[in-house]
Length: 341
Ligand code: PLP
Ligand code: COI
Image (cartoon, rainbow, N blue to C red; front, side):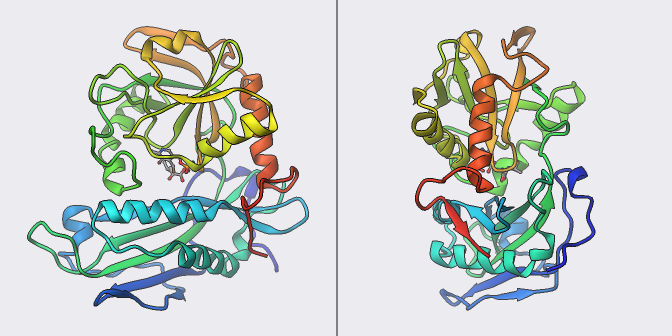
């Protein structure tokens, strides 16, 4: 398989159209058998549920080339499960997780020429999504849906790769208590756009969102969960019902305990505790673990002891172990690696 002529090492996190995408339509209470298509354009009615009432959910995962030349994905069954949960919450039909994994496999195989080579620093980002496609004008769920998966080769989510980020505590909330913060719905991202644009204008890389009920606890950013390392070397991740259950974060907690012998706990993290942290990272499929060097809370500056030059030592170990597992250099726990080719 001849790879596309792409400057893999200099890719940012952007969209590059690839040859094939997967499409399945839901009508009269059932999904069709699904197909691969060369057409990147979606044609829907002007009154489609997704356009009027934002009835759409999505996922994000990556395909990696391993050190021995295989193409793999990382825990795609968990993305399939999470998409099922997201769909249920927005009254959408479930695209079964077994079919999800099969569809991911087909679309990656069909775009093999776009899977970045081992060692290039790039990966193939896979974006499954689903939306209400038939006309809906009264507020109610659509009765027809489209499920699609496209993929695009990507580099690091944050410019500068592993350079520590500066983030601010946001004045906006991302999710309501008992709202949709724990699912991957497009609406959660639409409402974070103003906050991220103004954060960038003010020189910050990302927002730290707080719990919307009391605004005293750390939740997550617009596109990643937090992972902290305390000064006594314990890994701590915020527990909340209104954050997305990140697959990367859950995997890192396992890696911390089982591979690195660290103590790890998921618990509420109070804003006032940030000074006690030695390291902070943003973890997610796109972010992998992006280190945070400074957190600004309305003039109160918290400079993480790990500094602004490099990843902290524990973050680095977690990063190296996780990416080692994903790229086949380190033995993975059973069931984590789905071999595509
Ligand atoms: N939190 C939010 C809001 C996200 O959009 C993402 C990205 O998917 C994550 C966390 C990280 O989740 P995962 O590790 O499953 O990619
Ligand atoms: C991902 O990490 O897959 C996401 O969906 C986050 C998004 C901000 C790119």
